[in-house]
Length: 315
Ligand code: CDT
Image (cartoon, rainbow, N blue to C red; front, side, top):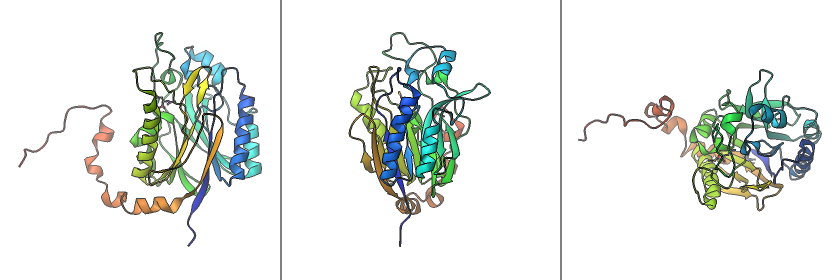
């Protein structure tokens, strides 16, 4: 019997510098989209905030950030060639960008575009890392909490390109709730983009841990939810600020089946066997059979850690 599969490509991006125009970036994305299609991809995953440098590292007022780095329309004339090429080639994509709504709300957003170049899904990042104040002694800032509002759409899934898929963005990938919320809606694949600085500005975290914790997060959550995960980095040194690469495609086994080698623009591909996920969700992670939500109430009742729950006396 033929097994269900989807061709997934991840298009990692090397650095985008402050001086790089959106048009130059779109050219790079187009080139990788064509390569993805040539390798039989049904869809290609681009990074978080793919169209510009990772601007939350710079201190500035909101208005300046909005003028320089946000999109008020998607698609817009600069990004339109990507939509046109997707329609021509018959390939879907995930694209992360900074969204400014007509009402003036700012989000760290990703869209899911199908093979006819229709936007079929939109996700707004929920787990925003960083801070709102200026940290003059830090080597750089991480101002996502200043520039963006927390996403207002929850964790959705979409049936598109013959797969049920969900989206998240960067820091979301470190939180188990992200994947479980989508797995409980039957997600077979989660796609995401990220910009992860190799230095932690809050403590002296050894650099190698930045990559290993990224991999642990996506591999562990892929396995524990019986799903495929495809993660695309923007990486390398943007105007001297280095970010990790290691874009990956992870199977429901938790194993990495494709990983980038370098820190430049690079496409990786796999033909993902969707029935493999079904096996995991039928057996070890059969939610219906084995989950006990009556014991999980603290997960939605509490935000931070609190007092222990009263326990019956031993015996
Ligand atoms: N872009 C983004 O969300 N980056 C974060 C940095 C975390 S710093 C503790 C990430 O999770 O990769």
